[in-house]
Length: 353
Image (cartoon, rainbow, N blue to C red):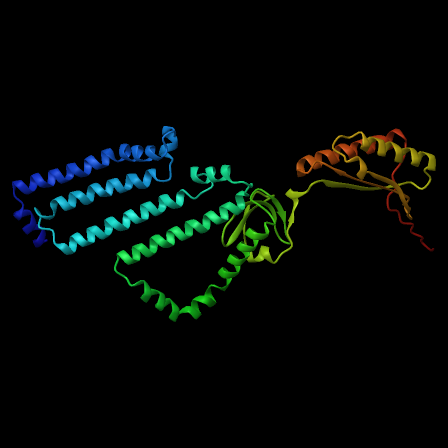
């Protein structure tokens, strides 16, 4: 408290003027930060629209840098009038550098996303089409490397010895390795998903325990939205060790049906029903003609079994269900028109008196 009182008593009119000028410098930089950021980004994106410039990855980092630059210049301006010590100025200088490093690291990392202009241009110029899942995995690795480099620069700026930190980590390496076994497994699992490409974001997959749409693939987990609309994060190690069915990569879906008809049905009528069902399937646009199978498959204790099988181009699950429903209605209509009854499981119970 006494130090603050002494500081206030030491300030004269010239110091007050210097403080006002310093405050004016900060306000000026803050006011001009948006315009300067806009002009700098505009130099590199000459044809970009105003909205695209403001959404640029480096727009906010440049604006933040200009703001803290104004504060730093104001502090330098006040160093002599307020007799700020070199130790305090060194702290302000380090803070200025650290904030600048983090701001530009964020901007650089943001430029390596699927929505960034840089990546979109790369995808357009790429000779072969790259899946978003694979590209996103690579971009995540790049962002991690950028932030790691920024952290190393910040640690160096704070005066810590990087070699000493690495040595210290080596001492506890065994403990860290044991604690990070699951993480390492998940990272290798993520790499397996990346290289093997069993599925991509947006695919509907099914495993032993989980089934749903893939929403994101990270280093550690794969996020799946289930049919109940809930989110489940499955470790990549679990996925890499499981059998995964990718329903989204079906080229065609199979329609299969067994109809058991009463034993007393005349064979001529059974053959007519068989021919009508085959003709009905052939006339359907979504049904693949050379895949149609309609056969009198066998005789059971309950009745005569009619086996129906075909493939349809309706790959999407909902459209497949709609097509399946339409075929079922048609089959029921044919059976009703031919007055053919289906047989059901029956049991005869004999009671001895």
